[in-house]
Amino acid sequence: MMRSLYTASSGMYAQQLNIDTLSHNMANVNTVGFKKQRLEFQDLLYQTIRRPAADEDRNEPVGLLVGLGVKPAAINTIFNTGNLQATENPLDVAINGTAFFGVKVAGNDELLYTRDGAFKIDANGQLVTADGNLLEGAGTFDEGAYDIQIASDGKISYMIPGQETPEEAGQLKLFKFINPAGLQKIGKNLYRATPNSGEAEEWQPDSDNSVSLEAGYLEMSNVQIVEEMVNLITAQRAYEINSKVIISSDEMLQTAANLRR
Image (tube, rainbow, N blue to C red; front, side, top):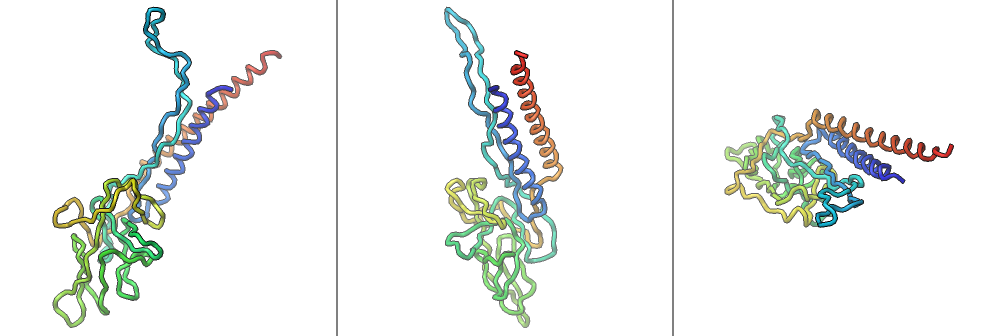
């Protein structure tokens, strides 16, 4: 059989996975805190037909090697900060920089992490995510709390009726990783630490000014829809070209099979 059949089929499979990744990005273009993904490729094994040589009998500086296709190598997550959108809601908080909120999820002994800062207050006066998960470092609000403020270093304060000085409700804790791309995505805007991401390091606002919190803002997805559309067209054309290679290889085999007619 012709190598080109298998080579082109590997290209079609790789581009199919590429389109799957692009469609996931575009489906989450309005997901708060979503980080786009990028598929990376590697070429496959090369078959050596003739090795290069440089000796007394043969001087061939270039050999004859045929590549056998492509394979998906990794799906990398791009963690650049998305656009910050003003909401005028004091419970909406955006992270400016590469860090994560710590989240306590029922049934998990370990902390999970998120970039989604669309917070709510539950019936117990606790600051929670949209799924009701508690935030690490946040305290409890007294009944009647108003004028809630979340400072750039994560400190939470509020006012209660009949009192002139603000009350404190803890300080949001942020966590950083040496390799955020190594975090495991588990859905619902949550990440889990892995050996590849490294251990979580708590953000120290007094000494680390590379991260800050912006209350009244939400970090939108970092997906650029025009860029994704261009990548989608490129992937679609690459898939089409590989399919035409298979058709051409099939026609060549048909010609060879009909030589005796």
